[in-house]
Image (cartoon, rainbow, N blue to C red; front, side):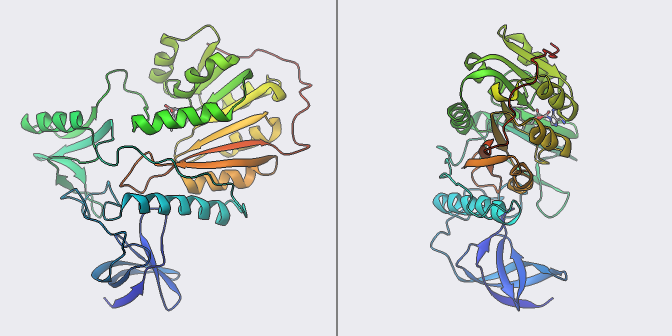
Amino acid sequence: MRTVELQIADVAFGGNGVGRDGGKAVFVPFTIDGERVSARILREKKNFAEAEMTELLEPSEHRTTPQCPYFGQCGGCSYQHMSYEHQLAVKQRQVEQALRRIGRIPEPPMRAIIPSPETYEYRNRVTVHAEDGVVGYYRRDAHRLIDVERCPIAAPELNAQLAELRSRKPRDGHYTLRAHAGPRVFEQTNDAVAEAMAQLVESLLPSGELLIDGYCGAGFFTKRLASRFTRVVGIEWDRYAIAAAQENAAPNETYVAGDVDSEFDRQLHGSEAAATCVVVDPPATGLSASVRDSLTRHVPSAVVYVSCNPATLARDLGELQKRFSVMSVTPLDMFPQTAEIECVVHLVPTAGSADSGSKPHVDTTRA
Ligand SMILES: C[S@@+](CC[C@H](N)C(=O)[O-])C[C@H]1O[C@@H](n2cnc3c(N)ncnc32)[C@H](O)[C@@H]1O
């Protein structure tokens, strides 16, 4: 395989540095924009190539020493070699680029990325795997386990649980270690950033008649916002999460166990658009075509889109722009040292798009 000398110009979403070899983009993990490297080409495609760094010729001023002995082999972290300030700058830029390139938003109204107060030891939940006496995470380049004694991005109590798990030589399988007790349902992973995110979402929405929270989990946003609305409806297909949400629900909270694809339209259809706000927090695949369609047909008075994938977010905003204006985009660093990026986007109907609110108010909620 040939070796090339590259000037790394950018860090792409996913974490790889990008250089150019004769015009072709070459992706090199664990490199930083501004660096000059030698790299061995591992895979060559028509439009791009993948390579591994063989020598660091000119290091970036943002290069730093990883805290984890497994960094580079483990599939979890991508950025431990980068100063935290630079990780934030890279993530902010990646979101902006995705919105420009995929979403075709020429000037995304970016707000500054919200950092994590803890850059290590922040995870309140990790899943480790056991196989043939090895307990740890999968390698980044193969479906093989690395024997992990300690994970520096996991909270100290999780590392204590990991030590205990390892000591009892567990059977083969997957083990989710959690810092919080409670039902085994989706939970935001970084407590401090989750709190900042909830405050942000709250600050973006006006008080009103109805809030529909699509992909509500156990009601993380719904419950927080319930006192600001006459009624709130959370939709989620995980019945355990819905049961947890219902357990301490106030009278104005309704939780619907079902697929957002069908339930979202039902809820929006029966509501007065001008008096309705929406929160959507979908998985990495983003909004389905039917949810995008519901939003552009019913046009609620405000939408907050919480995303864990800038690429699908950009795709969805590209379509939602038909009826909505993007008022602000705020990246949040929920997952320091990793390539993951969380975003909160605020949308309002563009002039002339808002539903006149003439639909009758029909209560179609199901408890
Ligand atoms: C990113 S989580 C957000 C959860 C919640 N907003 C929170 O902050 O805890 C996405 C949630 O959507 C649920 N989900 C994914 N696809 C769904 C669908 N098509 N219909 C209903 N729920 C779905 C998942 O079970 C998960 O709880």
